[in-house]
Amino acid sequence: MENLRYEYPATRPVPQRAHVGVVGSGDLEILLSPSESQHAEVVIRTSVDGYEHVWKSVLDRFFSRYDGAARLELNDFGATPGVVMLRLAEAVEASEGDAP
Amino acid sequence: MSAHDTFIAQHSFIELTARERARALLDAGTFRELIGPFDRLESPWLAMQNVVCQADDGVVIARGKFGGEAAVIAAIEPAFQGGSIGEVSGAKIAAALELAVREFEAGRKIRPVILFETGGVRLQEANLGLAVIAEIQAAIVALRRYVPVVGVIGGMVGCFGGMSLAAALCSRLVMTRQARLGMNGPEVIEQEAGVEELDSRDRRLIWSMIGGEQRTAVGLADTLVEDDTNQVRDAVLSAFERGVPASHRTEQVDAQLERLARVDPSAIDPAVLRTLWQGDV
Image (cartoon, rainbow over all chains, first blue to last red; front, side, top):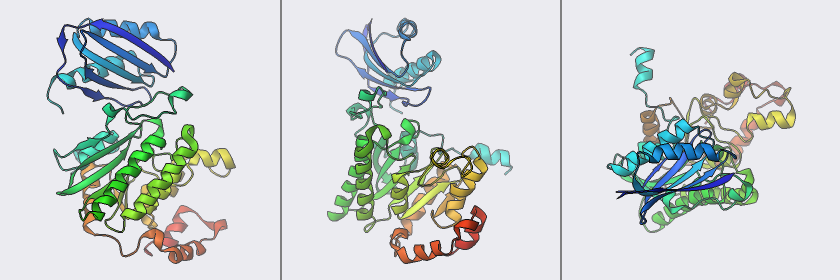
């Protein structure tokens, strides 16, 4: 298991918290909460060691379009970059609109 | 309807997560989660063993209405650690059932449902998991005097180990065709007794022994349903409407011993067991 942490700039507050996904094979869970600070924080626990550079690439791309001041907690059980991107998009959608 | 139309009209229960299952069963708009993921009550033991935690420890406790009456659902998440019961996830189920007992003691009613999907105790938490499974079992027995405790085994994990005993203690048990119920899982039996004893890859054989259809036919489960959320909900509703059984399966000790006495271990297979046990419960 590996613990990773990243920070990205943010320009606006996030309306509400959101929870998506499960810590199951090839999937991950994301807890997205509004943050008081002026940046976004990503905290990752992943079952697969040695992929820090891939996480960095995925998050760099995600935060090139996302500017919410959120704290994102990712509990990962071997999700591929594509699945991570989909879950991030799902979490953002749930935190922006009305709760499902 | 053609087989194709029937299939398309079904809303799979198995494919839902624990949270979606609880939400789908409760009356629309009444789902309210207790100790949800943002309470971050996760296992204190998994991270020490380099295993990634889930924020709800794999169990969803939901309050709401079911068939218009107050209800509590404990739903186990199949995808997280095989639905295994750890100290925290088990305590959530036990506490939900114990709170339901207190509702009745205070003169109120509540309908308890357990959505099983578990390999049993979580091996990384060993005795703490076993101890809490005993608490779950004690709570089911305390609660079923007041109200039917209804269990659902959805599949595809099934229900094994100490939690299979918890399922057996339920007043009524609903199973899908895909669900399995047994003490030891087929892989464990093969590992311990050899492939000559049981080939765990022989799916037809495994399901013919411990699958939902067989378990219902021999009276160890009550209702067989298709993998359809509406059918599951209807079966659970009907289980409540029939009220508390005059005597629970696990109270019928003499009758169960008599059933066992009819079995010749040297000449038994699933079909023979059906003819021996069918229709006597």
